[in-house]
Picture 1 (cartoon, rainbow, N blue to C red):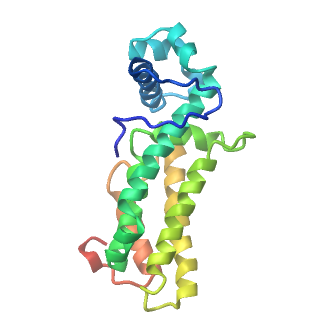
Picture 2: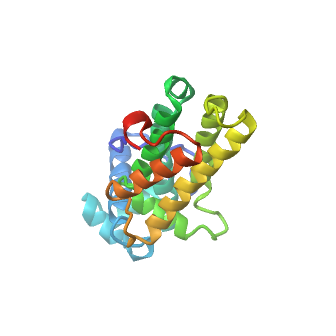
Length: 224
């Protein structure tokens, strides 16, 4: 996934507009620092001085770009979901899905989601999930991206599983996605299981489970 370039909309609450290249560069440095630090600690444990030290800025320069820490978290979340959506569009767009065999498409769904959940934004995802009951629901943008993925899979693959009619296939594809995300969310906050997203064990198990559920040969596509 590409995190070298940060893409932010201008309407994020509490995030001040950055126009000049230097201002954008400093803003993005803070965001990248926040993404890195969230992989080792909770957001409440990150001090603005930590961010300034990590990216070579100052506390004053932070407040020039972000109204407060809540605005900064909204920027982190927006940067993370932007990177996710670019990866989703690249890997499971409609044109690409139409070219895939059913087993290949299921494997790609597992790998896409596992890649996202183990990427540098893992800490942002964890923090968003742990704050899901807050009024603004930090997980909501991730949920919107999930809907895009499953919508593409339903449209492209509804007629591709011989064991089921199109209506049942779309329901089963939704369950496949729920199984993957539920498993990865559990791994995100309970990282002590035998099957881990940090190695191949979780992916292998999910690939096999999805193929069995969709009644495909386990050796189809050569890796299940």
